[in-house]
Each structure stands twice: as structure tokens, then as C-alpha cells.
Image 1 (cartoon, rainbow, N blue to C red):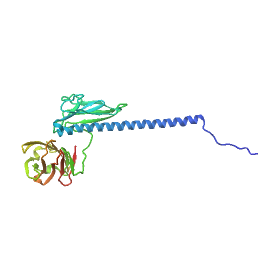
Image 2: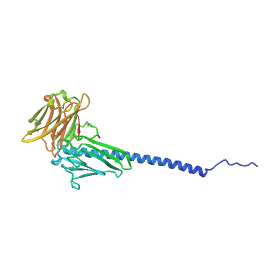
Image 3: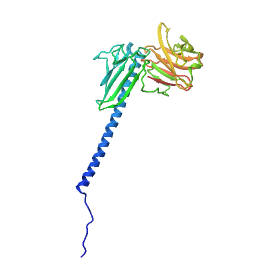
Image 4: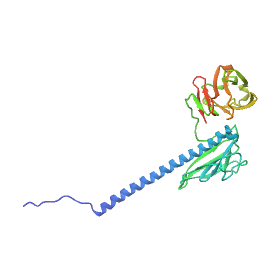
Length: 297
């Protein structure tokens, strides 16, 4: 009679404990990595959200929405968009943006006065500010994870590069950027012409381009007022270089101004844009130059 030998072996208690321990370690690493990733995403999204609110307050100031300028007030757990030059806590017109409970503003370093040291107030029509400095956003559970927003005197922040759009018509436009595709220094005169619905000229302003460049002939900046049918039309036009062969031109117009406006250089040789009111407070901006690209802010 043959003896049957069973070679099957079970797991010992020690082996089971070792396997469970390894699984727990792996799970801990995965959970920790997930938390770290979530913290990073929260920090990034919150910083972008704050930056969006800063841009919104600046944009409203440039367009003089409701006839006033705007500012943004920073608190550890939220930011507030407010009307006018002074922040008043609890004002019904305030717009509050609250962060995730895992993120906070850990440091505010802004020039004051004017302001309280915790706010940025933007100038009407221009969008500039005297409250320059930095705002630091932090993950509460990990102070080493931070992102910084830098605000300069032009009201620009360190987040968000210039983005272009290929749309030919943009509605509700009061602050518009045009990627010209050529250098504005190559032109001598920038002309603004207000016309009626039949294309008849109502008023015109010619700007000597060279007069309004900075010392290094790099940035063009002009602000002026033209009387059109008895109404003062205030416009600001400024530029910045985008590479060696291109200029980005920024046009800012009062929100309440509705007369049709044509903008061109060198007696129409290079058309830039036309503002045209189409009713109900909607304004179309048509690019008329070849390869024209524009953006609304």
C-alpha cells in the first residue's frame, strides 16, 4: 500500500501578518499621495480663482461699471470685490469668494496708503493701482506648499498670460486687446474716427504715435477726450511689445459710450477695429486688419 504525501502547504500566521502589513503600507502611501495631490490641486485652483476676481475688479474699474471703480479686499479665508475706493465689511454690494477650508491666505504684503494694507483699489478707466505687492496662498496642513500672486502698478498679476481669440466679433467689449501682427512703431499716426450709421464722420482725433512712446521707444500710452455730438468720449490706448515683430494694442473705452468708432493708422492704410452699438447695451467690435486677433477682458 502506497503512502500518499500531501505537499500542499498553508500560510503561516507570520506570512499573513507580513502581507497585511505590506498592503497597509501601500494603502498609506496611496492615500498620502492622493491627499498631497488634492492639496496641490486645491492650492492651484484657489490661486487661479483669486486671480480671476482680481482681474474682474480691474475690468469693472476700466469700464467704469455703474459709474464707479472697484477694489478687492483680502481675508484669510476669502476675497471680496467692492465698489468705490473704500472697503466696508457687510456692504450689500460686496461680492464674496470663499476658499476651500484647506486653503488660506497666509501673508498679505501690499503698499498702503491708500487702502488698508489688505486691499487693492483700481483706478477708473485706467485699471492701475497704488496698492502694489504680493498675496501668498497656502495649504493649511502643509505651510511649505504656497503660491504667490504679484500685483504691479498697472494692476497686472503674475498669473495668466495674454490669451488670444480668433473670434471675429466680441460682444459687450469695452477693454479689448488686438494682436496686430506688426510693430506699431512702423506707423506714424493713430486715428480715431467717430461716424454715424451712414459712415459720415462726426469727429476725429489724430495721434502722433512717436510722441507717446516711453524713453526706450518700447511702450505706447495715450489717453484723451474728444467731443462727439456734444458728448465727451474718453479713450485710453496703450501697447506692449510681443516679440520683435509684433505689438499688442489695448483699447479702453467708457462703458456708456455708444457712438460708432473706427480706429486705424496712417490714414487708413492699416485698419485696426470698429466699435459699433447694436442696441440693448450690446457693442460689437469687428477686427478689420489682416490676421487680426482680439481678446475681451
